[in-house]
Length: 237
Ligand SMILES: Nc1nc2c(c(=O)[nH]1)N[C@H]1C(S)=C(S)[C@@H](COP(=O)(O)O)O[C@H]1N2
Ligand SMILES: [Mo]
Image 1: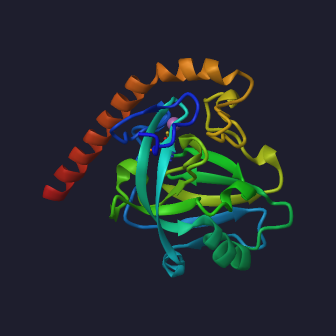
Image 2: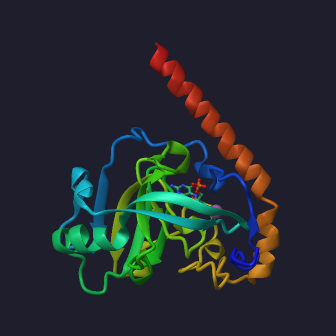
Image 3: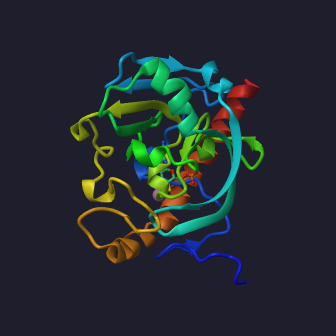
């Protein structure tokens, strides 16, 4: 099996791709997962919202491994969407016009979750805004209507249910979602360098976070089952 590259340090392969995240966000779902409305905000010449404009961007498909900071990884996830680079060059830059130095990009989900990455990391060609998974429209479990996929960075940078992308000059404009502590949020969170978090050594976070996997999977699955049951009974009425 020499042709299968090893997983990054500290990661363990998982067969199923679970719905996952920080506990607080398990029970929050987008109001209309079929409708994309994405704000472009922050230190920009013109704040704006896009919907259909997104459809004009060139589409790509990509297979990549997905690595959660709690140490589970899934191999070969097949995404479809548009490159962040194309979104930036064809929409954000010409229309919203980020100001010089506005290079901290904050990504916000409709569930209130947010994360950030340096613009430079997002312009890598493997970073995509995905609206398809396994040849199907992206479902609510994995981030409908649109999510970030940045395979070189831990899952927590891969924000689901995107509602806004913000360009800021000043880091103080950003805070990891309350009440989660700042040590959980590394500014880059690159998987290859095991940048799991800040202040604490990565080996320590590996062990700490690994304990949280079963509860988180259960919590998110239970919330999803309830959401689906609600949607179903809503349709029947
Ligand atoms: N909006 C939103 N995005 C999110 C999260 C979340 O709770 N809400 N969780 C993050 C974490 S910690 C991980 S590992 C991945 C999980 O993605 P998945 O649910 O598709 O497996 O989403 C990330 N993006
Ligand atoms: Mo995660």
